[in-house]
Each structure stands twice: as structure tokens, then as C-alpha cells.
Length: 168
Image 1 (cartoon, rainbow, N blue to C red):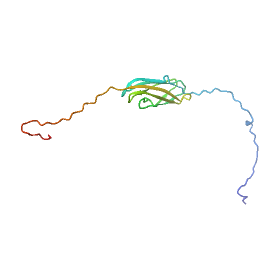
Image 2 (image 1 turned 90 degrees about the vertical axis):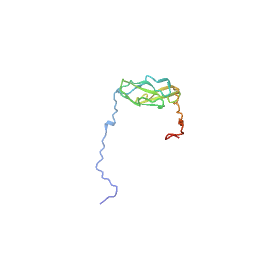
Image 3 (image 1 turned 135 degrees about the horizontal axis):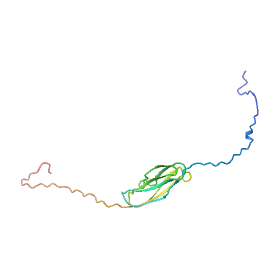
Image 4 (image 1 turned 135 degrees about the vertical axis):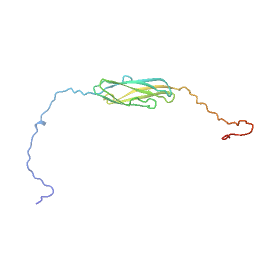
């Protein structure tokens, strides 16, 4: 016969002690070394000087990995129209230096400033900035090509008042 929906059959209740929880464990201090990347930018400013509108000037900068693990860096510009970076992604092995560049391509006269942002997996400095500046001078004035004057066809005086085919 069924005793109901809830029922139990006690088989055995055996208390077991765990002496491991009663013991205080003390471990010796150990020095742990974790290799990390360490990005160093030797230059934090790039000045392009005077550049004519429509011209392109390239300036180099270096990325040095002073750490013990590979650096993976993403490079972007706050003004990519006037200061486009040469590389947008760069990897640098430990104790190595990689060179890259940024261009100054002014589209109009004036003084320009921007930031080149280098974001990396460096845990102590994940974002580093290179300041960019340049002065765009007006380019040489190019004279427009001369407009062609409309040629008016004159009837040649032939004495007879005749005209050729196609003349007005």
C-alpha cells in the first residue's frame, strides 16, 4: 500500500568527522613572478612645423616594450582627416622597439592640434598619448586655366555672298 506523497526510509545516520577542517594550514610565502608588457613612448610630442595645404609630411615615433610579455597596441588619432596614423595596430615583442609614423595632411590653412592615442595591454599605462601639432600654410595660388573665348565664324567675303555648308 502507498503511504502518501511524502515518505522516507531511514537507512543509516553515520556521523563522519573531517579533521582537515580542524587543522590550521600555514603555507610558506612564495614569490610569484608574472611577466607583463610595459609600453614606453620615448616621444610624447610631434611638431610638424609649417606645411602647405595639400602637402603631406610624415613624422616617426617609436614604441618600446620594456616588459617581459608581448605588447598589443591599437593606435588612433583624434583628428584622422588631418593626422592619419600609419599603423592602426602594432605588436611589439619584449625588449624590442618598433617604429611607426603619423602623417600631417592639412586640408585648409590654420594651426592644428590632435592626439595620437596608443591603447595597449600594458596594465600600468593602458592608454598613452602623443600630442600632435602642425601649422598649415596656404598653398601656392594656381591660376585657373584661361577661358576659351567663343569663336565667331565670320563669313569670308567671297564677293558672291556664298556660304559654306554648316555655317550659320
